[in-house]
Length: 158
Image 1 (cartoon, rainbow, N blue to C red):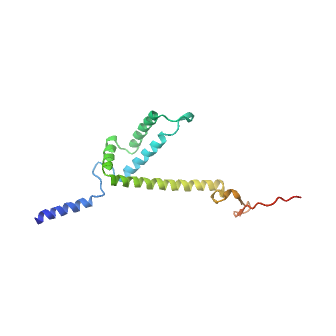
Image 2 (cartoon, rainbow, N blue to C red; image 1 turned 60 degrees about the vertical axis):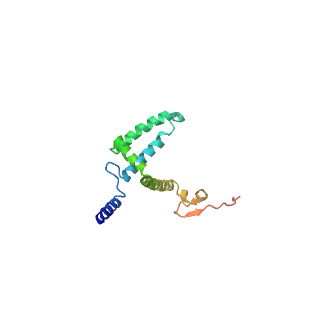
């Protein structure tokens, strides 16, 4: 009786140590995140308006997506079979899939923050007033880099 209980406890402890691991042949969460991020970008890119401002037809969009997905899998050195196996695993484990999507959201948020910061830097380089709350209503003195608020004055009549 004690042997059975001991064996069961050992199996439970061994299983707990494997909680965050994925089975062999399934991509780790980081790799799945990277592939899915690229695929989401491909989906968005495939829907962009075609030449001449004509909306892209659904059949053309689907063909584009197939080509992009193939390129993404090649880029990540992954076969369709390997991807489908990993996707099926994560789909069958919603808690792990949610973690992958949370990781994706962190990457997208960090990229957006970085992009916004770089955009603001470029705007500032082009027009230092752009970072001020009322940038168009300020004048930057040419002699110094002190910002002087714009004050409307009555015209001087001579």
